[in-house]
Image (cartoon, rainbow, N blue to C red; front, side, top):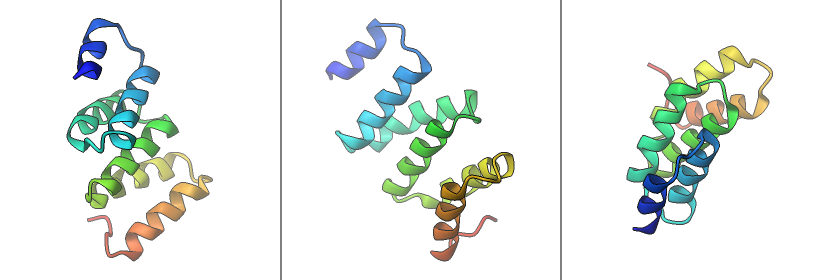
Length: 100
């Protein structure tokens, strides 16, 4: 895997890692590789909307939307004016995925 070689050879920024995680999702449908990358970014940067969005996308596409609920809930608590996040959370709740 050339991408694996690339990521170990160069020092990547968080923005680079976000792009790598998104590439695993969008182009390779490799949720197992994208998950740890995006989850690590989230642990270090839980206040960045683009990381939240990528992680929520990962969980939805991987068939694990219930993992997106607490992330969206925490984001909305910090950013109550984010209508997109509220809509996503409502869609998840409407599908029977309420936060426990």
